[in-house]
Amino acid sequence: MGLCNSVGLAKELEKVVEEFIGKKVFNKLDIKINGCPNACGQHPIGKIAFYGLVRRVYGRSVPFYMFLLGGRREGNLQD
Image 1 (cartoon, rainbow, N blue to C red):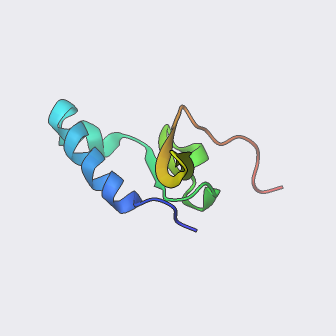
Image 2 (cartoon, one colour):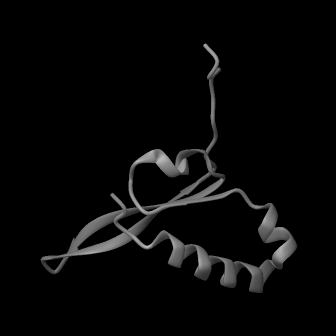
């Protein structure tokens, strides 16, 4: 159900962030990117996350990303 090009976003994000903060810092970031709103890509638990959605703009469906900040995982998954 991928609605957006998550690979394309990842490549561009890597270029921009590395330019501003460097590759060492970028590699330590917890970034999750998913091309659809389902949580298969685990975007709700990323400290920085993007997931794809579709919006109507002037009557046309247009892909866009929702930005999430500060995700975490709580609870005991072994229960």
